[in-house]
Amino acid sequence: MGRAISKTGVVHAAGAMSGTSLDGVDVAVIDTDGHRIHGFGRSAYRAYSAEERAILRAALGQWSGPEVEAAAQVVTAAHQRLLSGFSDVAVLGFHGQTLAHAPRLQGTLQVGDGAALAQALGAPVVWDFRSDDVAMGGEGAPLAPFFHFACAKYIGAAQPLCFLNLGGVGNLTYVDPRFERPEEDGALLAFDTGPANAPVNDLVQARLGLSMDEGGKIAKSGTVETGALELFLAEPYFARMPPKSLDRNDFAEMVGLVRELSDADAAATLTGMCAAAVAEAMQHCPQAPTKVLVTGGGRHNPVLMDMLKVSLECEVEPVEAVGLDGDMLEAQAFAFLAVRVARGLPTSAPSTTGVSACVGGGTVSVPASG
Ligand SMILES: Nc1ncnc2c1ncn2[C@@H]1O[C@H](COP(=O)(O)OP(=O)(O)OP(=O)(O)O)[C@@H](O)[C@H]1O
Ligand SMILES: CC(=O)N[C@H]1[C@@H]2OC[C@@H](O2)[C@@H](O)[C@@H]1O[C@H](C)C(=O)O
Image 1 (cartoon, rainbow, N blue to C red):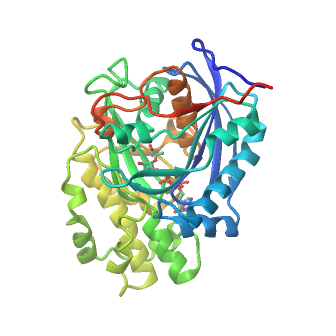
Image 2 (tube, rainbow, N blue to C red):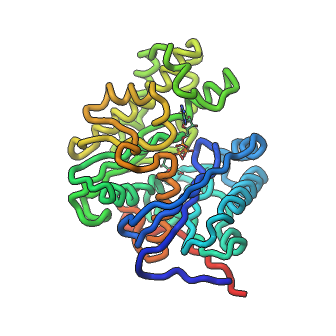
């Protein structure tokens, strides 16, 4: 049965995110009018099987062809299964899986078929969030910042603070909650900090067959090799002014810088690179933030969190310290953004993606009646 999306009032919305670490799909519900968060609802997670993950990995960095088609099918099917438990919501935000991201060259590619999901689930689906931003000269990423602004209001923040997402790639949002709306000049500054967990994951996968350095156990007994760290920080990306964004594998060659090191020293050095990139990023904040709230899988790594605490000149804590859920923040973000798109509100601004003017990217697919 076809369903229109109401244009006013608070609605239940679900968001689905399949991140760059290729671990699985997160779904989370929020109540929102597209401006403020009125509450958080249930959430769910579905891990990709080893076979599914291999299909996604094989398509990384590609823009078209059979590998991309196969990955798209895996993503659509995985989301259909998980989202079938959420089709009672007013709208579903479907990010899809980023396979390639080069906004100034080929563009940005998130695979998965939102129109097919809308039809299969009988619910409106908002998807393809990044293309319009890129078409208007933006980076197309990060897009969570407008949601981070709403989070800052939700937790009652009164002074500037930062949200730091440490997934495969890292991204930082500086929020000044003294502004009323996220699109106001000065309310937000956002950009990708550098590689976060992806290089460590790639290292331990290649050397030890592990998917991650769980709890930072390998890095903990190692030492950061300062020569490799200096070479890393000499990368031109760090001197570039924000907004700026990265593809997952833009720093894949970093694993080469630690080739000669022991497992422990290599893991420690790659973990140190993630923290050093964040410290560089903080230099761009217009004002010193009161705190950095960390979200994404990297906050589960105590070695990384300790490095951040040492190198940043402010309080560093996981988002749980203010009552948010760091495993679901990105899924919640795409639920929130879906409501904004459905209501014609912007989802990015010159200060968050470098787009030429505020834009509400996204395609709305409503299932055909019948
Ligand atoms: N207990 C843990 N110990 C160490 N690292 C962890 C732990 N849990 C998660 N991680 C790291 O966090 C990663 C997953 O983070 P997250 O789910 O935020 O990434 P993502 O959403 O896929 O990526 P992105 O935000 O770049 O799209 C894992 O691949 C791993 O490297
Ligand atoms: C192109 C793309 O998918 N980028 C992701 C990736 O993962 C983290 C970082 O790089 C961020 O820019 C973005 O994701 C988050 C959800 C965002 O858009 O805010």
